[in-house]
Length: 219
Image (cartoon, rainbow, N blue to C red; front, side):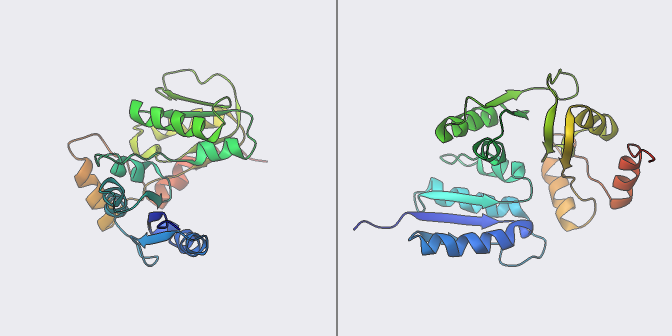
């Protein structure tokens, strides 16, 4: 009997509980797991954990890697900086596997689009998935969708009101958003990393209340 497949497993604080469950499940299935953290629900600088997972895979110490975070995009970006490791957020393919008739995924990076297409093809759902590099605000989206997920997205949008307005315009049932939180050491670290790369937008809870109050209608 050969050596078990070794998996590097990591998460941010938001994914800690799921990582704990997955750790036990993988071990029960006979996989060898290297737990890269985090080890509690305290806020953590998750790109460092994603980088550790990627390095273990790229070096050959681990056969596969799994990184869990609230949005997925940030971890994928961190992993893709490591030569020999590649990652993409997987919820679009997962939705198609669960029966979605059509999934549209938009990203700024050609490399991420290529990875998403590869994942969809490997999962056998490429006939229901379209991944494209588009400017969400400038380019037409086309059809309305039952659900819209804006994850790892609002961080880079300079006009949140216009962005939310368009998301709601192409959504029939529900829209889901993730917003990076303003304040604290992690926000400061992230701003520092992005200082010379691109503008980064973060939000306080009062700012979000004010933003979404613009779209509330009276009964």
